[in-house]
Length: 173
Image 1 (tube, one colour):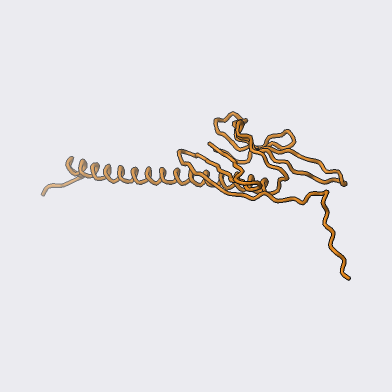
Image 2: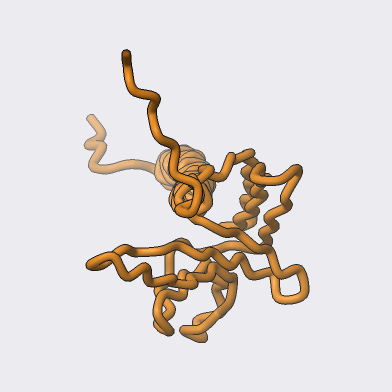
């Protein structure tokens, strides 16, 4: 009787070949899942940046007394007024796209009283066009990890009554 201790060389090589095929397949599957997750992350970041920027700019246009788009600098200037003790104070805010923090990513900034604050990142383009008096179309474009998303919205500016023409209700007789 012959004692058989261990595997033959052919059995060991066959086992290594099968294990290698299974391992390569598993790594390809994980790599595909990782790429899909990264793509989804880019899409979600782009959509979040658009939502943040769009909502902020839309709300400010609705509130502003005066809105002006400066095409040369791609800057939106808004004039609002604050009434303190019957002394109206006009404040000029502006929104613009720049890379003020020098990180290679263009951000939408809000400049209020001389101080610029970032609103949203990854903006690659934006434009505001007055379609008709008081009606503004806002177009924003964001690119994150080769994922580009464009957002458009039409916003109506609030109409403020003039302070000089006060209406008086007729008295009932």
